[in-house]
Each structure stands twice: as C-alpha cells, then as structure tokens.
Amino acid sequence: MATLTKGELLEIAYAATEPAVSIFMPTHHAGAAEIRQDPIRLNNLLNEAETRLTGRGLRRPDAEALLEPAAELIDSPDFWQHRSEGLALYLARGFMRFIDLPYQPEERLSIGPNFRLRPLLGLFERSERYTVVSVSFAGARVFTADRERLAERTDLSLPQGIREIMAETDYQRMTNAAPTLRLRSASPGSVSGKHGFGEAPEELRKAELIEYLHRLDAALLPVLSNRHEPVIIVGDPQVSGHFHSLSKLPNLHSEALEVNAEALPLAELHRRTMLLAEPTFGRAKQSALEHLRTLHGSADARAIVEVADIVKAARYARVDTLFLPESGEVWGVFDEGRDQVLIHNAPEAGDVELMDQAATHTLSNGGSVFTLRREDLPLGARAAAVLRY
Image 1 (cartoon, rainbow, N blue to C red):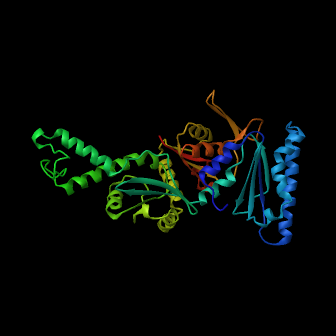
Image 2 (cartoon, rainbow, N blue to C red):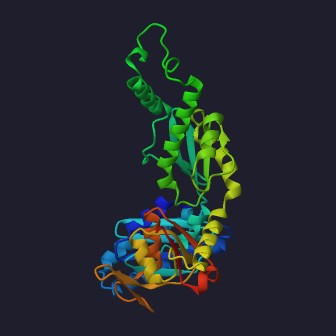
C-alpha cells in the first residue's frame, strides 16, 4: 500500500479490542537470502507475542487463535515475494490488517488496549490529499483526492444549482409586482423577466448566479475551512471564474480548472486535477507549522504544548491540527470522570499511548495530524496542537 487514507487508518484504530497486537518489522523485496529471513523474523515475533499474551492471562488456545491469521503468512512464499521495505501487522480478536511501509522500521512488538499508530502517520501524510469542488449552473460536487484516487463526498448538503435561485426570484417578482404587471406564464408571448420588473434579463441572471455561488461558498466554508490541503475549483469558465474570485475558502489553488467536469470520467478528472495539485504537495505541513509557531510566539491560547491539555482537547474535538514527534511515547490514561490525565514514566496496567489516542480523536473529528522532528516542536515539547477555539 503506497498511501493510507484517513478512513483506512481509523478503521484500524477502531478495530482494536484488548489485547491488541501491533508488529513492526523490516522486510525485503530483493535477494533470496534476505527474503527467506523475513518469515523467520515474523515467526519469532509471533512466538514472543504468544508468550506475552499468555503471561497476561490469556488462555493459550485463545492466544493462538488471535495470532493464527498472521501465522498463516509465514508459509506463504507469494506473500513474501511482494513486500516493500517494511511491514506493519495489526491483530485483534477477529481482525488482521497488514500495511506495507516505504521504510524499514525498527523491529517491534506491542500489546495493549490499542494499536500503535505512530509508524503509520508519516505514511498517512505521504498520501498528500487535496479537495476538488466541481461547480456548474446545475449544482456542485465535492471530491476528496490523493495521488492514487478521487472519490465523491456524499455527506454534504449543497444548493441545488442556479434553478433554485431562479425559482425564488421569479416567485418574489411575481408576488411583489402590481396585479396589472404580473405576467401569466401561460399567456402567449410572455417571457418572465423581460417586462415590468426594472432589470434586464442578463443582469438578473448574473445576479442569480452570484447569489447561488455565495450560498455554495457559505455551505462549503464550515466543511473545508479547517483543512490544510489545497482546494481546486473545476467548472465552465464563467461559473468557475466567478466562484474562484468570490470564494472565501482557504487554500484555494491559484488556478481553476476550466472544463465541464460532468463530461469527464472520474479518472480523467483525477489526472487533470493532479497536474495542478502535485506542485503544492508538502506546503500544507509547512503552512500548518508556521501557523503553530506564530500562535505560540504570540502566546495565543489556541497553541498548546502540554500533553494533558492536548489529550483533553483532542477528546473533546477541539484540536484543529496535532503535531507529534516522529518517535517517542507518552503512556497514561485519561480519567474522564475526574477530567484528569495521568501520565506514567513506563506503561502500567490499563495505560494507552496517549499520543496515538490523541491522533485518533483528532482525525475522527476532522482535524489534521503531522509528524515532525522533535527539534521542530516549540521549546522541545513532546507534542503540540492548534485548537479550533
């Protein structure tokens, strides 16, 4: 898997049931001797996992059943012939998922109440996402996209095109006109908007178009304002040009794609928008980091660096952007009843890795997560976040 979508990452996160087993190991895609070592490495890790699971009180048959899907991979030559640089394996009762990693991770086994997600976050960033807004007189469609795919969002409530505005305008003009000036649509030769209303048809239709585009922008702002990826406008020149100039959406690409999106197959729409989006990849992370530094430097309360504050804010959907170091762990538990975060120097019974938990909550609630070098975090903090409010 070259990229990882937010949905795929969250599917893994929420599939965890205790005990959740996370395995990370380097793999090889060339060299017979090296490839033969990979199943041996996995076998050793699964043996260690079984020992630790039974040591935690799990019956041996239950431990074996939990690990069996991964054990079946050991004797699968085809599986090992098609690996990349590294492998992440996630196992829980009735669940197994493996993810190819584009780098060689440190060999590691983790067992706890949650899966370890930190090694996947960098892969998630590499997917480099962007948004496409296709706008026409008939209506608008919104797509999420990355290097590999483009998919339409169906969860949005958007204006139903310019006809919705035209119907309102015609109704208002008819009901507000004097009785002697009201036009009857059934009258021979009558054309709505041409007589008695004080406005030329072309001026009226332009005003209706602008009203429609303002409503579309207002509907999109709450959905897209807190996102850092670029937004590309697609549509016929007249419509896309007006929308691009009036929209208040952040991160609008400087250039609109002037084409009838409805006439394009999705694969072609993806190809054309990628040509615009690709040069912007990498900017979202840098822009978010600069925003964090600005807020932190001015002592703005929206920039926080204390782990306990970050864990709480993520749980309550207040985190817009979360910044985590590429490595390092913070073990503890959030006691919601007492509204207290307990942090421990070493993992204790019932503890979770708090930064993994904060990342899951942030992504679930529409925020963004970036991994950084530790030295790029403010004042050597273990994590940082920008709050929505």
